[in-house]
View 1 (spheres, rainbow, N blue to C red):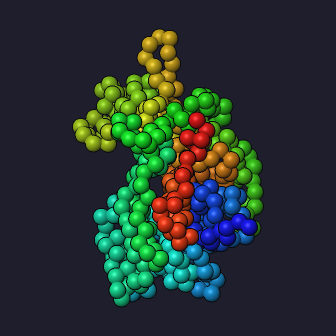
View 2: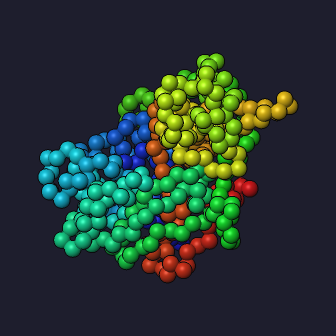
View 3: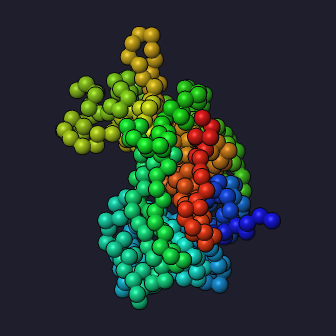
Length: 387
């Protein structure tokens, strides 16, 4: 007889990056997910089922519909926590945080995990979250561990730094330790995965700029989809001036590699900072953070890493595609998507990388089982297994 899976609730679930990782770790079963954005909720439902997926404002879900669960995962927006201590239920800035805590208090999870941007760790919102876990606070039954995790340290081919909070009422649970290390670090861990590990072998020239013209119904609404990951290999049609700029950018370079005649006025006048703007990735390093506008090189280091200057070489002078961004976020190729190009890009950029979530899930299992943490099962990441 197999082990009974741990039930979990995913709040602010987005397209399901965090759920994807926990399911990949096995022994976790979602009992409810909540997402307010229709297309993100549709993507979640396409991958994990519609029956437990709530496309709704979290505040509209009654207390008696919140199931008990072993675990709550999710990342409430960092804005609005600052007045939680006032208990002013009418303060709109508090709404989403108060709703997250309402779910915790009714679902009574043994553990909950919060993922947020790195600056959340030094915010007044985070300080008040800690205060709520003190005696007399709304979360006084929980012990908190918190800090930064770098996605690349857990097999994701991306240098994405995030604040992670693990709250437990079954004893303090530390943050997981890295499973991978940067190449120049001595030790026994496998090296970081790189853009080469996930981008090489994909067609260098996308054959289309549009998603297939298909639609599907979720939550009684028609939405674009369902799309295979390979459907997301869509290009753009940059103007000649943009193409000329791309040709000057070497791997790891950016706007400072452009000649004066190709600099925009704002770049010409801004002599420092924003070094990743108009940047090109490097084959043998993880990417920088994949954000929601990864298809715009003027927003960051999003040019394809292939670049050779000699006459016999060639460059791939375009931004990465949605499929490439999804791979850099560590989504598996069998993941399915719903929404327009812009909506899917937003889902990809906002997601928790599934392989980071999977590492957290593996780390939590012995604590949830009541085993010694030393019994943590050996884990090999998906990219290492495929190598």
